[in-house]
Every structure is written in structure tokens, then in C-alpha cells.
Image (cartoon, rainbow, N blue to C red; front, side, top):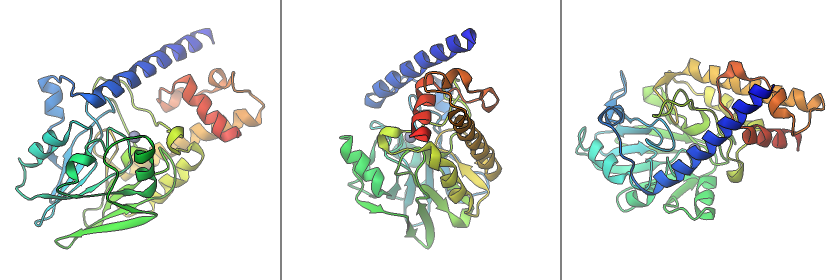
Length: 300
Ligand SMILES: [Zn+2]
């Protein structure tokens, strides 16, 4: 037990360090190696005509994944990384098309996904869930969306449709899934993240309680997402994946919540939940304060 606590404390330190780094990198561009820059270069999404990915693996060095759809009459993008990312995004899109960016969709308000909204506003409509806009305004971020929606909306360009769906709370209270029906592809935002950050550490789901996130509702929100018809997935961070991978993530999340619920039902108190909870099989490094925050939500 002592070793487990020591590991947890060590992870908590790494996490607080990581979030400090994330906040710093939100202000200025980090220096990246040629190998890292290569991993962050725009590429076509295999078998999906007109769809490209500007990869993102974390909230610190590389930001979220940006989906780029070239329609023949303009470009629709999903998410836009950090406050300093406008120049890099437009330069990279310029290597695959001369069409202008007409619409920017936000999966949620976080600075590594919607950070350069304000730069896109003179040239494009910026669209997000109504709660994502409320979060941007409340947090004093720039780039509050021009257009909002409650449960779903669509953008049409040159006959191509992109749908935005809000299936409920999870990572925040303003999460949207962006759906490309003709291409059978979704961009999930941070409702679904997978794999390792650019620095090699493992990603784990984050419930942003300060912005309306919910562990209790996250699984049902993923079930809404899984009701769409698609085969290809662009996660909030991580590699291109399949619908089956979202089911794996959904079941892991369900295990996490039900195990904490079982401990609550067994009378385990807040101070002991971290040592009593066994989630080694999930391979999600969750800091003690994050586990306790879930405990607070589920027991509240
Ligand atoms: Zn996020």
C-alpha cells in the first residue's frame, strides 16, 4: 500500500507540473524537434476524400487534433489548437488547398482546442455549443463563438454537411461531437482521447468540474456518440482510430465510475478512496485529487 501511495503522490506531482507547463505553453510556442514537427504535419485521412488531419497529442506541446475538410467551395475545420496556432494552421492548410477557411467548429472551449478562435473570426464563422461559449466568456478567454447551438446544428458547404452534436456532459458541459456523415467519420473532442502525449506520458480522461464536466454522465454521452453511423474516429488527442476503440474507452470509463460507486456504497471515505481503488488494468494514470473529485461528484 505504501508503495502505491508513493506512486500516486509522484503522479500527482507530475500532473501539477504538466498543468503548469500547459498554462505556460498556452502563451508561447514551444520549441519542437524535427521529429515532433514531422508528427504534427498535416496529412490526408486515409480513404476519406477531402479530409485531412493536423495531429495533436496533448494539451501542452501539440494541442488537440484539428480536422480539415476541403469541400471545393471552402474549408471547414474542427478545433484550432492554441492562441499562437493560427499562422501554423493556415500555413499547413495552404499546402493542401488554396480554398479559404469558411467555418471553424469547436469541440469545446479549452485553450488547446479553441485557442485561436479570435484569429479566425475575421475570415470564418466560429461555431460551438452554447455552454462552450459561456465557459469562454466566464474564463476570460478570447474568441467567444459567433454562432451557438443547444443540441445539434449543421454546416453545409458545396453540398457537404458537417453536423455538430451535443450528447450531454462529460469532459465539460459544452462538449460537441463533429460528424462528417458522408465520410463516416467523427471528431470527438476530449470525450475520447487515446494513447500518449508527445512527451511519451499516457493520456487519461479529465473531468473538468470547474466547467461543468461529469463522470456520472460521461458514459451516457459516449453512448449518444456511439449511436451515430461511422467507422473512423479523430479523438481529441491521439491517433486516428475506429468505432471499436470508443467502445473500449466507454467500457473502461464505465468500470472506473462503477468501481468508485462500489467503494462509496461500501462506506469507504474520501481519504481512503485513492488507496482502495484498483484501476491498474485501465492504464489511466489518474492523480489522487482527480479520483477524489470523481468521488465527490458520485457521492454528492
Ligand atoms: Zn479539453
